[in-house]
Length: 130
Image (cartoon, rainbow, N blue to C red; front, side, top):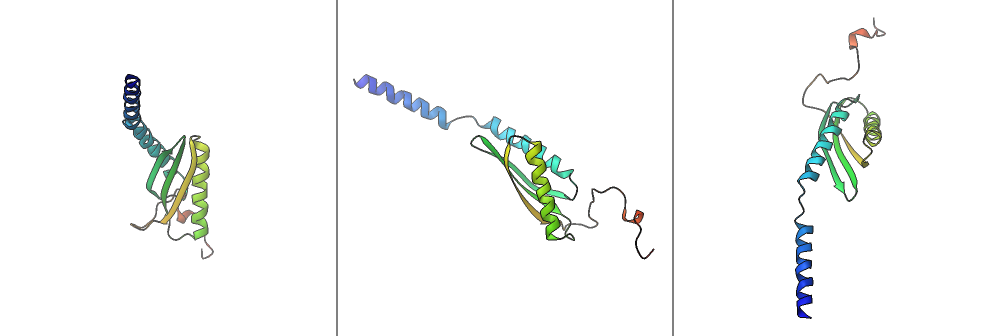
């Protein structure tokens, strides 16, 4: 009887070691690759000047991304919100493994003039004064 108990204890200890000492390098590496892919897609979107931070993490069977994007500080809050919504929509449809995307929108301030994804320059557009 005691040998059976010892065998069960030994098996439980081995099982516990396997569960707690799982190698996680592949998951962490995959998360880093996904973060870089997400960042590259977001940087090409109109209205996004920079991606301050991008983190994709697994939560159970799901992947959740959290981004902080920088936009032109001269736009309205509503326009910044709409840019964030477009980024979220694109990521949710582009990366099917994402179940949620949280976007934080901040004004970009380090330098001027601000990068624009629009084609053409301001000189090409006519104004009322001309």
